[in-house]
Structure formats: structure tokens, C-alpha cells
Image 1 (tube, rainbow, N blue to C red):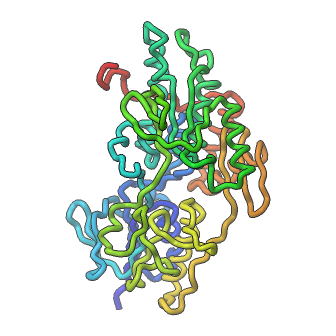
Image 2 (image 1 turned 45 degrees about the vertical axis):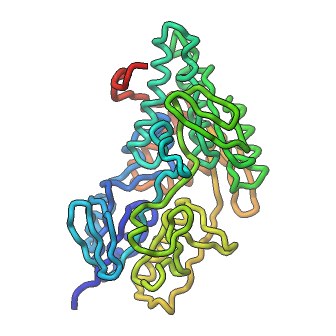
Image 3 (image 1 turned 180 degrees about the vertical axis):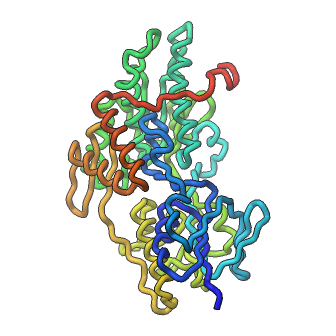
Length: 420
């Protein structure tokens, strides 16, 4: 009797935890990912803002599964799926068969129909994204310093973050700390502390999924850092030298997009129902209609919670979904006997800056230094690898006491782009 094969596409929180849940199973597990590492995305903004290095938040997939003998990892990109023949097709032409398929491909940036903005306003999903943003931020201060006319520096010293969710809030706060603290007294012709950081949110409040008291507290903390928070207004245009927010034009070459997500294009090859964000609308057991052997989990699935609203695209959701599907397969639970997936909300946190964060655990809301410590502890706990946990902890201690960010490396030259 041949061993059944489980193919998992994606090594994010969802795919990784599904694979781990199958450790002692009888399945032949294959984990496919475009990269060779598991990326801890919640701390990616700290790579983009020079607080951490890429290797501190990424861990080799092969090392994670070194001792899991039933699991093979393949570095490849899946371009299509044939659910009728149970085959996945790789970009190099290879074809892989499966008995069970778990799709955990995550999400990419969405520009709401304005795809031309992407080259001016990069998002933050990969290590390369983070390194590009880091280089742009640091290079802008250098370009401003070498100008003969300081009055021309505004476009380099204005930073615009679009999207007031956790990523946008964390990015804006971190850039403010770079300008006000890290680079203080590092330049002679410009004053980095005079840089303007804008956070733009189309909805009435930043962190709109948080209670009003925490949202207000976060905005106050950002404004104390010098961030200019603009809410209730939409971005109407982005080009290489400016951002237009309805009737206001901000001169800048530094724009970071944190406003929207779109699921992977791969999902369209399944011919299953999709929501407006391109996520597959899954059944209560996270499978797709008429195919109980195919599961879609993490940021690429539309799964309703107890309030009938889609579950949030956060790490705890993905982790729980991965473990749930792994449990179903490991115990060979038939479709009709599967209990619906139930998300346990452990709470939400967001950091604004050094010693500043907000947290919500059920009905208990708190902010400030205690919330920041809790945020840090939880993030270190979820990191993969002891060395990474230790490196991040040491890095944070250094930043906390000195204000200095150790990853301030510009890898290229300022003039590799066209002259400005």
C-alpha cells in the first residue's frame, strides 16, 4: 500500500504549522516555497528601518525540518493547480502529484486598481522589499546632505506611509525614531530631526479594528513622536516626486504602501469562489467546495468567524488554521465528521515606538511600557530558532538604551539611479 502524499504550498505561519502538525503522521509531506526560508513578517518593518538584519527574522526551512524525516522541502514556484487530476505545476515545468493539498500562499500588495503606483510606493512583504525600503530611507538623508541648496531637501526629508493599520503605524513610528534619535547629530548640512513623517488613513481612525480608546492612544503617541496623522482622506495620486491626498500635495520621493492586500494569483487556477481580495471562500473545515482534499489557509482564505465577519489576516489565525488542518489529516477525519474551524482570539497588539504600544486582550485594554514589553515577549516567543530569538533580544536592548540601529548599511551607491 502506497503512502498518501500531502503537498503544502507556502512556508509562512499557516503552511509551516500544517507541516509541523504532520510530523508523526504516516504521510509523505512535501513543502514547496519560492524562498528557502520561513520569514517572520511581523518584524519585517524592523529590517526596513535598520533595527534588525534579515537573518535575524528569517530561518532556513530545511533546518526547521531537519529532524522531520517524512517531510521534503522544495524551493520552487507553483504556477497552476489542476484539482481534477490532483497535480500542481511548477514554473520550471515540473509536475507534482498529491493526494491532499494545503494552499498557504499568503497575500501580496493591492493598490485598488492603481497598479502604476507600485513602483513609487513599494509594499512590505519580502526581505527584498524591506532592504529596498531601508536603502531608500537611508539614501534620502544622504542625498539631502549633499545638496548645495538645503531648500531643495524637502522631497528627501518627507516620508509618507499610506495605510493606518498595524504595519503602517509601526513603520511611521520607526521612521520618526530614525529621524529624531538614530541620526541625531550625524549630519552637518541638514537636520534629520526636521524630517516630516506622514501617516495617511482613508478611514476616520488609524488602527480601525481596535477599540476607539486604543486607536486614539496610538494616534497621540505617534503625534508625540512628530508624525503627522491624516485620517478620513484618500490618496488620489502617487508619482516619483509627490503624493496627492485629495486637495493636498506632499513633495516626497519616499512612499511606503501599507494599505491593502490581495491574495495570490495562483488561487484563480482552482476555479473556486473568491472574495473581493481574491481570497478563496472556504467551507467551515477550510476545504474548498466539492474538494475535501484541498485546504486553503492563512491570508489567502476567506473564513468567517463567530461574528460572521472574515477572520483577521494575522499570524495567530494562520497558525491555528495550519494546526487544525494538520490534525484533520493526521487523524484521517472524513469530511462529514470534521468540526468547523474555530478561531481562538488571544488578543491584538501594535507597537508605536520605543516603550510605546497598545494591546487588547478580550475586554482588557492597556497601553504604554507594559504593553510594549508584552508585545516584545510575544514576538520573540513566536520567532523560529533560539539564535534568532537571542539576536533579536540583544538587538532590541541595544536600540532601547542607545537609540542606535545597527543595520544602517546602504549596499549600493547613491547614483546608481538616474540623477536627481
